[in-house]
Amino acid sequence: MAGSTQKDKAGSEPETTDRVRMALFVTGEERNSQAARMNLARFCENYLAGRVDLEIIDVLENHRKALEWRVLLTPVLLVFNSERPTRITGTLQDPEPVLAAVGLHGSEPVL
Image (cartoon, rainbow, N blue to C red; front, top):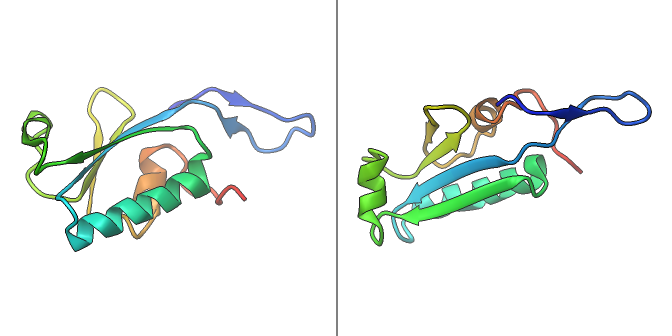
């Protein structure tokens, strides 16, 4: 995701200031859906530091939205970073695909 950047006074690494928009499709309290929720929450806390707009959609309650986005299995994360969202399936245990989708590939967690 292309974003605006700012340098601090010391001229260190630029910091992305754009918000990241995502939608996580889950199936109720199913085990993989719970794991995806927890892993995504940890990811957002560690890497996005409050710069995320996240919608969690339970396909059991809102199947129309799943059909609209052609979500046929869960859990799946949509990262809206261009005209076509990036889709990442599974429990999101590995942060690398999400980092790449939000344009932060190789970034370290924010402490």
